[in-house]
Length: 234
Ligand SMILES: O=C(CO)[C@H](O)[C@H](O)COP(=O)(O)O
Image (cartoon, rainbow, N blue to C red; front, side, top):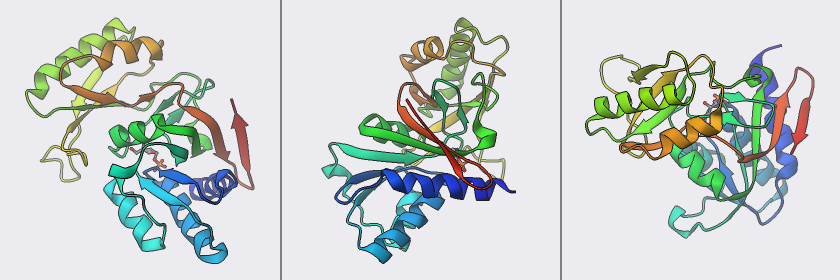
């Protein structure tokens, strides 16, 4: 069975957390995309009334295409539920996110939500975070200086040999630029032994806008399996 089916099972189970009248954070990436499509279908079939807050331009375009009404982002104050994917999930529901480069907006929306529901396939579950390179969103100005600071910060956080690389677009020539106009440093860590320490070391560095460690934000993790979905709540 493919991960697409697992993602679909997870996304379908997340609809259980959606109620009439809710403001919903809409995540980014392939699993969140499946959720937005299923949400659009439910709105059409059942007349469900919700408002979405997308975490990327791609998700915004998709939500419009499938008929999910959007709240103007400048009107947003609180969010009932955010449904989003993840690149890694550990046993404490700590996450690495940002594989799609949307981590800043994803974190703003997740942190403003009463409940963050993570949807993923089984491949995303890990014992220790760090197999997936940690994305760090930085200001483009003098990013090489920031990259060295990020390397040092990860070393102080116990990462043995961090490998910090500027993310490039598909053509490999130009830097990848986020929706907010920033660069991404992908930091191969192998293992991040103390995510809280890495968070503390990274977040105050000049030039760092945000990083992809989502700690203490997810309240529900839904893991899609081949025939169903496993729902875990904190
Ligand atoms: O953090 C993200 C985007 O910034 C995604 O949620 C993450 O990359 C997972 O993506 P997918 O559902 O395609 O595996």
